[in-house]
Image 1: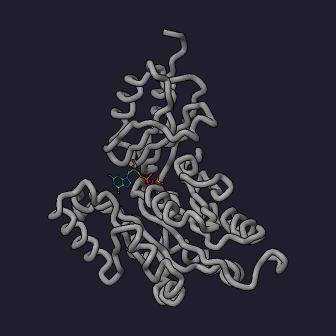
Image 2: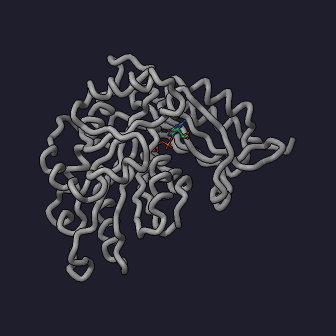
Image 3: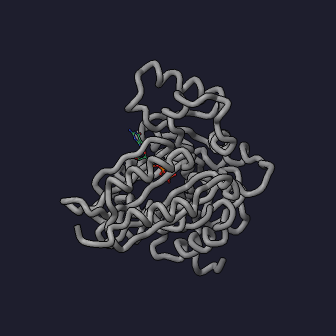
Length: 323
Ligand SMILES: Nc1nc2c(ncn2[C@@H]2O[C@H](COP(=O)(O)OP(=O)(O)OP(=O)(O)O)[C@@H](O)[C@H]2O)c(=O)[nH]1
């Protein structure tokens, strides 16, 4: 790294991780809304080939940098370092860099990557935060928890639960208890305010703690166990047929998201969000109109991922004649 590119004080870096659809982007939006005045830079990593997350972030475009089609913890590590270097070369430098990992990033690998001796001196990892879907903690059997999900939870300095708003009080207690079983001793905070006040995110304790908890993890790249399909269309889709198609494939998918242009009466773009079997179609953010095409990403386990069949079925949803 060229000395002329960097300042004297290391820029703090925060890693935001969590499994597919856990609520990372939602939380980031909430955190950024509370730190509006600051000169934050956000690096968003989408596992799929289409960048959906930066469309969903309510922040000035120049603050958000997108890395897609892989994971920043492994295949996109070189791109991550180049992006951090580029940010450090800005005048003024960002006050803080937040990296939103893809849902299949291994957080221990992120720690190791960011401990690179040169990067560390100029962009210092202050804390790793993991968002955990409380609803999954409540409804899933412990035996089916994904090993990557467990790894992400255990690698974090700080945990936060999402979807508490849709759980009953007893379920919230149950989710907390289950989380303590997986990662006893790691602090858990429930609100953005508490998160921002926490030492692991305020620069007062993260680095020391970080050094203490860094640990190796066996095995190949986490992303090798997952596959994604990026599907785009210039023409609108038939909404009913699309919904039926996604429903049919949902058992083979872990996550789907993106912008949908349909042939319905209003024609305004929709935002698809599917996490596990839970799917919703709501109004797309205004900035989606800058790129008036349907652009969707589907993610599942590599084994048995229905890439070809799903792409063909989606192609059949495209409206070819005016009805
Ligand atoms: N009710 C409720 N819904 C939430 C909460 N957090 C996230 N969601 C919803 O869960 C879906 C996925 O949220 P995202 O924030 O996009 O999740 P993500 O972890 O960024 O997803 P990936 O980057 O694709 O892994 C969206 O439909 C959100 O609106 C929450 O605290 N409560």
